[in-house]
Amino acid sequence: MSKTAILEFDGKKYEFPVTEGTEGEVAVKIDKLRGETGGLITLDPGYKNTGSCESAITFLDGEKGILRYRGYTIEELAEKASFLEVAYLLIFGELPTQEKLDRFYKDIKGQSHVDEEMKKILDGFPKSAHPMGVLSSLTNALIAFNPSSVNVDSEEDMYKAIVKLLAKFPVLVAWTLRKRQGQPLDYGDGSLGYVENILKMMFKQPHETYEVDPVVAAALNKLLILHADHEQNCSTSTVRMVGSSHAGLFASISAGISALWGPLHGGANQAVIEMLEGIKNDGGDTHKYMEKAKDKNDPFRLMGFGHRVYKNFDPRARIIKKAADDVLGKLGVEDPVLDIAKGLEKEALEDSYFVDRKLYPNVDFYSGIIYRALGIPTEMFTVMFALGRLPGWISQWREMRLRKEPIGRPRQVYIGENQRAYVPMDQR
Ligand code: CMC
Image (cartoon, rainbow, N blue to C red; front, side, top):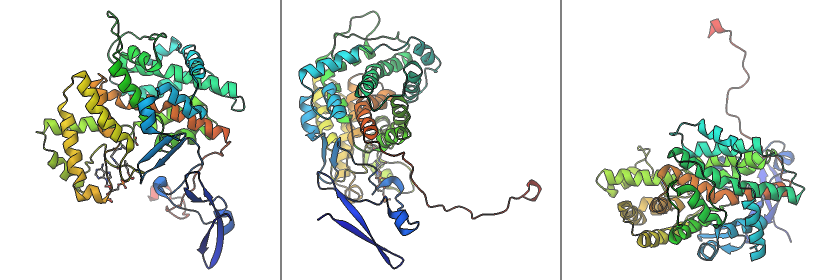
């Protein structure tokens, strides 16, 4: 028999259906709450207890530290898969055969050209502009050169839009970096793999040939996979919300990039390195910063620590911490901030403030250290996160449109003034 939940309000009882996911997660369906009770709504700032949708893409269990894309564990995918394979899995639901993957990549390569006029738009930005702002703007600008309205009832139309974005986005990422560095813009090399080509587009010097270092490519592949999706986080919810008004794919993704930029979300990876550098330059006293993080009168937070849903450990952080040791070792890079990071983590894991609040290192705590070892400048870290998250955003947007979800439009509890008469200017 299907489960129900009873709500008692103003002396009356109301019954609501309970829905259960494939991993046993239960939710009370309250879409009829307001109508049946004559006005009652739920209030949940930050959506801590609100499921915004049913989704078959990513499962995570924050208590057990589980993260799976389409049923496959993040540990196995990070170890065995390529980023493009994971992108295909997320978007289309199944791991591709070699033939399907080859076809997918061929189609992507066929769409990698970015209109030359886009360079003029890029030129309009000062070199000092933050790359996330530039990337979000360029992604939106792509609409002017590529019709954004996708016929979502046509698989072919949907596929074309997805392939275009997966093709052009890395070019925009590389151009954003190169413009910043005063380098000529480049299209890379179609004979390389997706991730290898991204590296070449970013780092090839005009007067030199570029050899892809397999250690660097493998590390980037892993990082991109670990960032590829994370169910209904802030930027993904933004993508789904914007897309729910039937705004196009590129416009929705551009909004997602803006949401990711904030330091409480993807921007934390840049903030972590800046924090670790700050601690190093201040003499390396981690204890002092632990105390600051715990002081409620001090706005300082330990960046890269804590998570809305992970309350035991972030499985991505575990993989990245190990990868940081491996990659820095293999590349022969010694980075003193890695020791500071490990010191902070050790202290936090033994400190009741962090233990009681279940605050552990998140995906952003060690990722910046690897990005830095790969030669990626600090202001580009969140852009790298966006590059990894792109297939997740696309898959969530596609799912939302295919399920014909209604426009996202939360309600509120108004706490402002009651009706009052207009006061003429001379009486205020
Ligand atoms: N340093 C110090 N105290 C913290 C931290 C932190 N990093 N994170 C949470 N707390 C405290 C917070 O002050 C609160 O304490 P109290 O109960 O005494 O008021 C308690 O822990 C619960 O925090 P919260 O802000 O209510 O938790 P939340 O679920 O709303 O926020 C978070 C989650 C990730 C925004 C937050 O932990 C944070 O700001 N972390 C630092 C930024 C960061 O690393 N963000 C990356 C998140 S993972 C990648 C991604 O999402 O992109």
